[in-house]
Image (cartoon, rainbow, N blue to C red):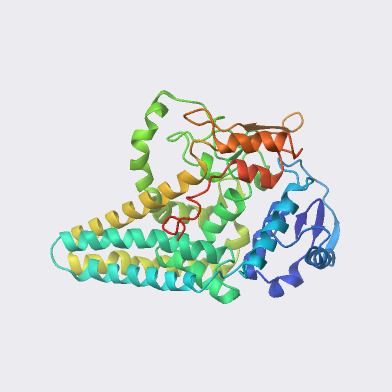
Length: 410
């Protein structure tokens, strides 16, 4: 059962034929309005594709959502449908698909996997300290790109037109020691739907959405609040004295990101069936998925910890494992931070105590002016778009990589 725009749907019989594969299970037991809108870019009202998809969804309608709590977002403006329509038209013009990209994405994947496994082998077999250390650094860098360039697109269903290949691409995160299922919970149910958004009544600064009984309807981005109080990444969070130095100690904390995830966070999520306020039973209620989790954890431990210790000795092997993860964590956290937590982006907060109240903090830049500020003025003035429109918020809370650069957009 799932809910979209105030209607409840029983999609049990549709799961096996869902074009996006088993990612449809992420919608189970929750209001999936944002997921529906964001994962169906061709579903533009009034278009043939939009009518077709809406008709398919209508088949599974069973009633109205009784406890329809107010959302931060609206989907009533013309901004998002217009944006989707223009993007689809542009892709058609360039003869590019929304999934799979070009052959270069698969060449890149093969290259990254080759570098990862070659570096791992060199880390285990090369003599001395310098060459194994260089190899484990290379392994850590390649692992970070496996996560962002292969697993990310595969888990989003965008790496290929094949559901099987997308699933295999998603499994590469398990290959490097983490968990694609856990990543889906945080990234696809938390970060993407609610980028830079903090639900003040539900979470505030405490990161715990279970105590008040609300759970999944809390609209918050875990990437924003999960590092608090060590890191302050949202204007709502209380500023402590030590936060004035966070730009100095942040790189040290960043380097431990994947190590903490692999060794503690993944295990805690599968134990509690919850990531902060997000229910994780959509993935971990399945015995097969739990077996997959532990099997891949065990297998990755063998070739990333046991084999280096076997060939290089216990102390040296553990050191190589640590350096590899510190490198991977530093690279990944740095890439993540410049997307959404940087000058020139907006932050949002929701408080539904006594009626929903929403706030969008305007972007701040060192020199006082930013293209994001101009776009916000345009949205508020010329186009009359609701600033709570999901797509408008996404534009305000994200920044571009270097547009047109092959190097930064490889």
